[in-house]
Image (cartoon, rainbow, N blue to C red; front, top):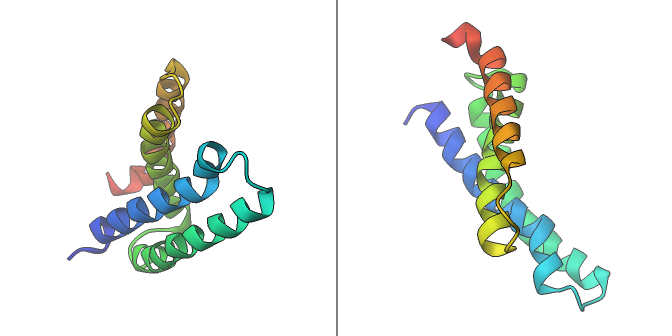
Length: 115
């Protein structure tokens, strides 16, 4: 399988773990001591790294580090918005659209030599 699709899928999985590690405790463990939330988040983050590190290694065989970073940010927003709206019950805001459009611009500039 080509490196870019493998990288995208692995970064997508990584970001799902990362988003839950970073933010789910705000909803699910708000009454627990922060140290408990941190330890559980670290456990979840382990799975994030098990996907993120190999994804970046695979991606770096065909992409620059800047391209990997912009791809990561696009994937992060793609995962975060549904998480915020459906899991955390935050309102869907136009700010997400504007941030997404900024990332489209970032993607254009970082990947334009491949277009």
